Image 1 (spheres, rainbow, N blue to C red):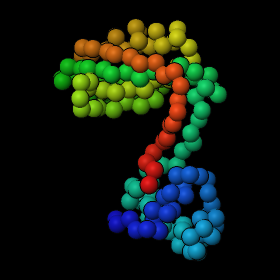
Image 2 (cartoon, rainbow, N blue to C red; image 1 turned 135 degrees about the vertical axis):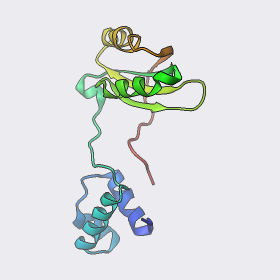
Image 3 (cartoon, rainbow, N blue to C red; image 1 turned 60 degrees about the vertical axis):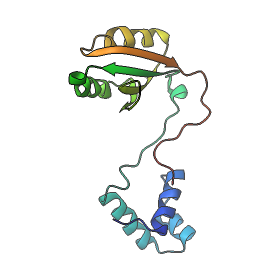
Image 4 (cartoon, rainbow, N blue to C red; image 1 turned 180 degrees about the horizontal axis):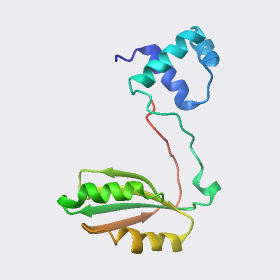
Length: 149
């Protein structure tokens, strides 16, 4: 699917407000509601729009400790470790990376006791991990979900 300028404008509007109605998008772009609905449906069908979601402020729901981990794994254990971590509800994101570490992971927990428990009982307990480095978030200046066009 080739993304044109109109599709990019639709995606930009939805990125700013995923709840924006077809009617409001249509007014903004000077198109019909039906045309907008069809374009959004096509963007979904083609996988350009993977899903619509809500962004929750972790502090407001009691997840006030945010930590980032660099994890090195044995090559034969990488996929199993990554899949196990990805299933853990404390893990907000997990990526295979190039560079000095194999996996980059973001963890959200309620307090430092939970963080210590996660590290000792859930992370270090996994077979195939050779090194773990952690970083605690002090302050967030910018956070974004998804791609911004």
